[in-house]
Length: 230
Ligand SMILES: [Ca+2]
Ligand SMILES: [Ca+2]
Image (cartoon, rainbow, N blue to C red):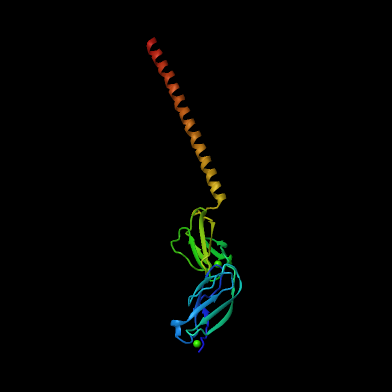
């Protein structure tokens, strides 16, 4: 009786630098699994493994022949060879595009995917929610003045590589006073003219009082002189 070796890999993607998990899926020949001996060759320059279900890291991308030999208790041995393709480890790139419409901002992720299956974490200033969608639309509170807000996006790919980007957006203010500018100017001018007129009237009034006082003084003197002469 001979062993019939077979194996499969549990990873969904074979990425350089990531642990690849091998699972045994064959028979063991005479003696069963207790006596079976294994030899895994990965053909990437690393030493063979003698465990039943090894994990292995391929440092570089490329095609690799995996050679598994299983020997049973009476030294019958059979090999199985499978080729796997290791892909490069890519980093995602976080890039945000956005459009502002009033107080509403539409954020778009326009970066790269890394090794895929990206997760998204948005952090928008003044918002407590942690948004996890790919694209995002938020409405800011209205303000009489333009205000700046910071938006940050962190993306993480399937093998845990992440990248972040922050943008500062300016929400244009909507003034609460809706009077047109030219009316405001006219009102200011009229107010100024009224103030000037009031000032002139006041100055004239004071002058009049002074004049009256002076006249009174003179007439008092005349009265006194007249009485003295009598
Ligand atoms: Ca045998
Ligand atoms: Ca990656």
